[in-house]
Image (cartoon, rainbow, N blue to C red; front, side, top):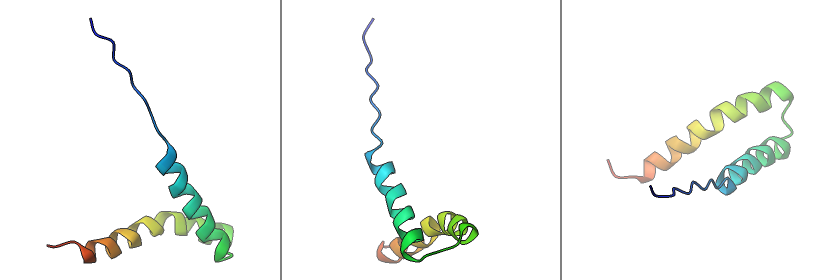
Length: 55
């Protein structure tokens, strides 16, 4: 039997969450607008990045 070592790194997830919270705080959004921003922010980033990728 071999030993398998599983290592999880959550650094990038933490950076992503800090970015969300910074955006919500910087724009001074209300609670529900903040929830909507958390849902829509990744979509708009994906749309922006897809414009730079070749099709």
